[in-house]
Length: 385
Length: 123
Image 1: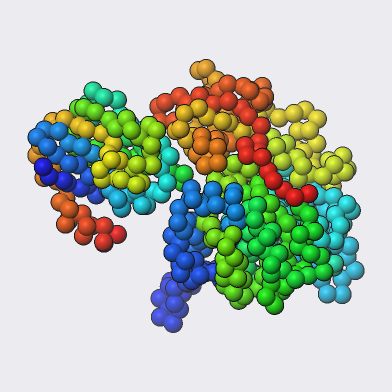
Image 2: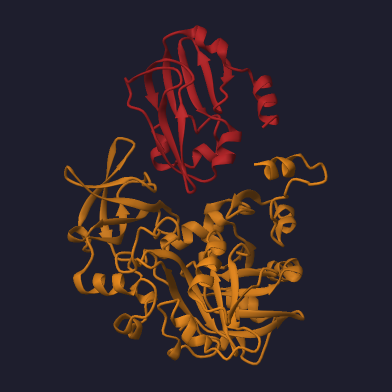
């Protein structure tokens, strides 16, 4: 206690400033409304969520996702360790089939099989590049540290910024600037390569979180404003905030960590078993394997599903899903789908009621909203494979 | 005819014993694109401060509190097809409901335009 009081009374210690991302001033200059997200001030919107959402679907939107954690997993200096085997001990991914430059979706599970995070894994020449969620990155580093031998280094690339350029015209805008061995237009979905953008070194992968064709671009933080200006100088590109990012990913049926999946959910019931690669399902050997194998063999009591709502009132996270008088589930994400012009939601419901076409109701503010179970994505994805 | 404002960013325009209620331009700007408005039933009896309507935006749902007590005389049918009127014309065409005032003295607790402007500037 005395140490704490001394610390608080020390006149030489300044209060800790909130962390700021490399594009903070750039967003403010562009008229963004900033909100706190994952511990950083982030742009929620510029001109408006609806306009930004529709612009991304028809042209190209630039998203700053520098809050996300970028990690490089590699052998410690002088260590003989097989980093591929070590990482397979931590994640349910099949790295034997992941080629250099290829990107794959995976899950970070706890020992009981609960989902701690979802992430993207890319094979680089001498190690693996991971992109994890912003709000969970510090916990993820701790978990990975626990799961991995000391002979494996976890390098937090926290001086990097991460941009996403998404939409059908993203390729046109980015190809004008991306110089590399592989022409950008030949890069396929879930592949990445090294490029330069006006002299700035960039790792670019054809991937994203909107359901559209698009790219994710890792660059040094100090060059982020230059690259953002370069891309927003193209007629197809406008900056897009986190508000539209959320409505776009919801339409694309992509789950949001902390909402549509949490440690309370396993991979099978979350509909994310594709994050547990086939060989690993039978072989096991990763945290939570017993739960995954049990859920695959026996099924789960509930499933994550998509709901299309009648009317215009949106269902929100936490709303009860009803079948007659029975409570059969709960909404984990919901909102108005700008592309579809009706509300949609993701929910966990009893497996018996999870089939497409099942008529359910959602309780919102004392009203019952009619809803139907539908396949996801709600809006067809347009990946370039 | 006078217009009053609440700290919850509703406006009420009073003519005789009838008040027309909506949300302010500041409020619509904060909420963003409005996609749906849930309005009270005509004939319902409401008490000052009750949440009696909900404005849904792409981002979130927000309660609208009635600034006065009384009976709901009319609601704005145009919002069923054009909820975006609340964004484009919040203080005229985007009105939400009309209430027959039960107690005109409740208006004294509200702000006039100058006071509301000052209130918003301080936020």
